[in-house]
Amino acid sequence: MEIMIPAWVEGTLQPVEKLAAHERGLKHKAVSVFVVSGEHILIQQRALCKYHTPGLWANTCCTHPEWDEAPDVCANRRVNEELGITGLNYEYRGEVEYRADVGDGLIEHEVVQVYLAHASQDMAFTVNPDEVMATRWISIEVLRRELALEPERFTPWLRIYMAEHSELIFGNAAAA
Image (cartoon, rainbow, N blue to C red; front, side, top):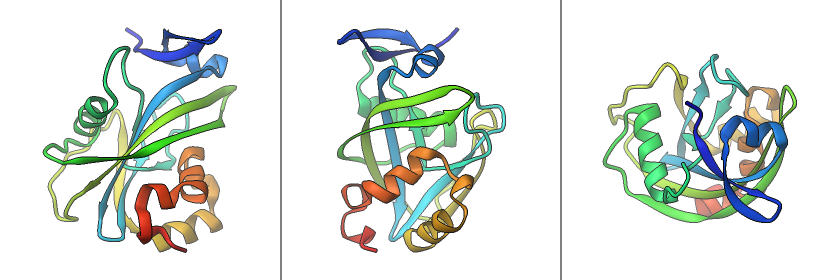
């Protein structure tokens, strides 16, 4: 069964199947989470079975709330479903809107509620192989270098977040 997500259709918010929202390039609600430890970010490599951007590196968790699901509830649910992480406190960092071609004729046009959570790099977690193929902690500085050298290894939204919204997300730690 396909997940119904909140999307704007002809100016009104309506439940739309997630894949259909991406096929039609509809503006829709999303949630992104950045789990940090000092100046390091936990990033994930998307599973190869994902229908768009498989194998690319993304922020800790990027997802869509279900119809009528609060963004903070969605953040907590999906970080647990994808990475098996529970017990974090999520700090709302703001709203970001972007539009990006994610390949195969699919468009992400997202209005994203962004959250930040602090954790220890030695926290235990278990990835869901249907969602995530690898994880790693990376400093903001090293991530910026890798994005500059090999942008194609990263999702379009992570490139946008780091280029245009890192101060909103990370505050002073993001100063380049």
